[in-house]
Image 1: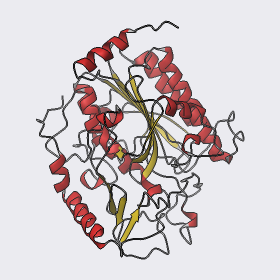
Image 2: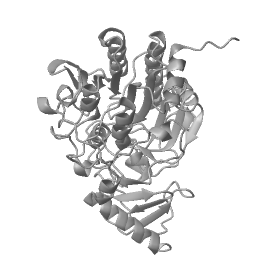
Image 3: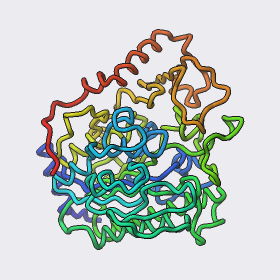
Length: 443
């Protein structure tokens, strides 16, 4: 078959020849409380996820990707590139700077659809999406813990629903509508789609109820996969696929604490507990791997290598400096940015990722080694009743389940990681790694 050299291919070749990267559109698909092992491409034997499996074949599947361990801090870290200890804890103060603000100044159209959860779940306008860099917003400011979701469109209330099974399709429809009808022709865009599922009061639409081998949770996972396929098909139909960087990941691990605690603590009334972590220990709210380590798939045709599986350490806090390079804006220099530019990792120009990852008020990973301090922070529903309060050291290369504490055998590694942990919490290590860019005002 004759190969046709498209305009996009010519642009890519031209940019590469000049050592430049063409500015992509960016689509972030962010799910809620989805376990590391919920997708078949991450080892699940019950849930069928053909669209996300195909996305992984067309791009890179990361196996050491980290977000945060609970909802609000995870979204704040994703938006700001800053650890929760530096950006408000659960919520996100109005004076934080998001990549949406910076990308908009750089000429991008920005949209947020779905769960916001960084304005204390309230309509505090200076902390809502329009004030934080998004041209358009539709979604819920909080979670669905009580089985009710209240919507906002931009800054105005826009109704509510108790039909949890309708949310995945609704948010997908709103995203498709943005791409088809609200997107400015010829202008690059960032679309941040943050689903409510699979958080606490889960449900699937009638079409998917009872259809999977994984029970109701499996039904929800498979509906999410189907709706993601619809969204990706829309990119194809609008001829946007080649110039769109797609990132799929989740905010934290699943609710699955029953086997770790003698009684459930702090769970929302009526919540159901689902999700699979595979070999990882514990789940949402925990500093063990199942709380922080999430599935992550990245696709950008002809730019991100196809069919690659990478165990490089990569994190949602890296989106800020990575987007800065891709979208051509400058990161703030008046505050610590914990994120690191991972553009070369994504594009296959290097195979190494972050040198370390910090677990909020709990510990740190450096390479294969992970340290947790005796008073490592757990959210109250994730506490392990039998856990002894002492230094913990795990070799994640040989013990991904974090079962064998090697702290007594490697005191020198523990001391090194303790020092690094202290530096990160004080901001010293971050300061050393912050690029000396000039600050840029936000209009």
